Length: 376
Image (cartoon, rainbow, N blue to C red):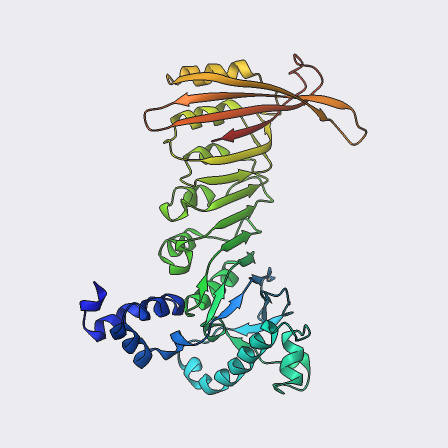
């Protein structure tokens, strides 16, 4: 279909593609190849394979940014200083940046050769290309060029500050590289404002995030429930920690994969929310939670089943299991009891598996406020 369009319109469309996608388009027929070769020859140049790209956590008010690359042979780049060029500054520094980027391309080829010894970027830049006299003085590489030819197979970004987050994301949106597997780790609850959330919804880079980890060190969820219901995160694997408020919003998440690995809330409220929430394909794991009803309280399978029955759905208990577990480091033994309830809804048949970990006897529920919950 695109082949029938004028060349000018095709080039406008190509402007929204990565170099990898543009090269794929070029190979569809001779006309496309000629258009790309004439207007965007960089897309046909050899690609740089990056096994893993990592942006470590950057402290607030930090002005110097580093990133780390792991090449396919396992060679590690060490810290690579980078910068974001915009507007007039980007044009003024074009020749200087191109020279430094050419050195980086040679470094990537050096790391790809099996016969070469491992060498970090700063050492290579000083010894081979004389970009600086000392390693700590190696100039920053412009982010818009750095990954223009790259195919990044795993992308890790740990952030705790909104400015840091958008500095990196906006810089990556200027590049034409391909990012296959994106993992974002939010390490602070006060990262995002509602303005940030609106920006996330329209950010091209944020339209697909493979894994989003949110480590909550306080007693509330800032904006997670807002992101939960966004269609763009349907295929995102969420991992949440230390949730002590707002967990009742979890059942309404649109994501197919979700893990909660610590937290507390009323168990019955959570089950009631699951019975009201829209049904869709889910593989969810909620572990190491506590039944918190104005303080930690024991719970029973009977009250959970009563809540399921009260919702009016057709269900049945399909499995009950008992498993010996170690209760503590001293080696005392306990019993983990689990029950699986199958829910027959018009849209989809799904399961709730609930387990009560580490009790002394089968009848001893008074000591146990903890629970694990699985939705599948």
